[in-house]
Length: 443
Image (tube, rainbow, N blue to C red; front, side, top):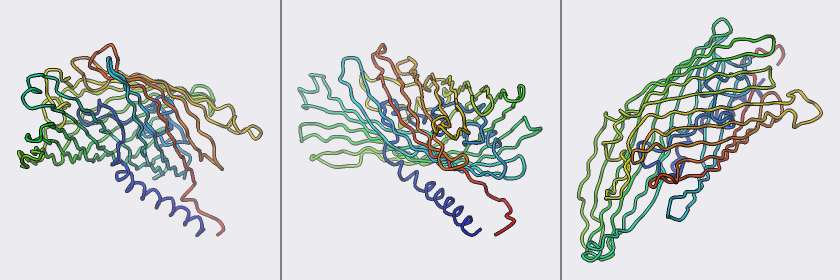
């Protein structure tokens, strides 16, 4: 008995250390993309490694083997007295291309999620965890080519860089009625830091350069509601429909803007302002999905999500509006509505096979199309991709190791201002399963 208690304590301690460590680890670039210069950055891919291997679906997904974080109502799909923990990592690899310019590449590695799920009472359960919400990571430089400026002051170089992440800590619960209808709700707290800097440098040392930027320490509170209805078909099959609604929220916190003279001629603070903003909003999101399951062998799902960012306030506020190095050729970002279509399936040849190990592996595939929450020079930025993955059973029960691959593209070379991103991403997930709270007849 004491050995069992000690093992559970170690799991909870490990989970607590991860909750503390994820934001610290994430101070490195969570993602590198020029599109993260706008708004709160590049939105994180939805879900855990389990969701990512099926194109990011999960609104209508119900499984007792994994934590499905995309719909709080799904937390009730579990074995009685079961406790699940999910921990995931991801590696983001991108190649950037733009018409008339050389290609570039980036590679980032970060923690994706840490989630714990446990029962409460009878048909109710709860989950708590932390995941990225958005990532900011970019850097670029260019030289002024105006001969009049070069003739008067010499070469002038402009550069910009940004880094930071927003994280979401959440606690959600769900309950099932009449064995078919499940309802769930989730409280979400967002927090994180974003830094954006812009420099103007002169080759002539008699002129001062300018260092300016924005420091954002953001917080926000919001909620998410979900439902799922499962309809059996015969003795083995079932169809589930699901829906989610994530509330819009005000992005609060402390915002600082600064501008310094930077050079050998003189050093001076030109401007420094701090304050608290209450006019930036994160958009609400609505999602619907439908899934079909045949026993413990096959599952397929389709999801659709939509959110409207046109009242976010990003367009008019420095620090959020995108490129602060204004010139006649500078591209302009504007907020718009975003949407995504996602589909995926899972196939397991035979979970109980005692002869061939790979017949017990869960194989998954999926695809997605999404429209980003911003326009670039009035044109939408679109992304699409395919995903592959598998969960390999480990030891006993539902413990498993998930490995996923994603190949996709964002942006188009047909639009002169857009950067085309070709990505090859990897995700790794560890799913832990145990039975707690049971009464032992013998110690």
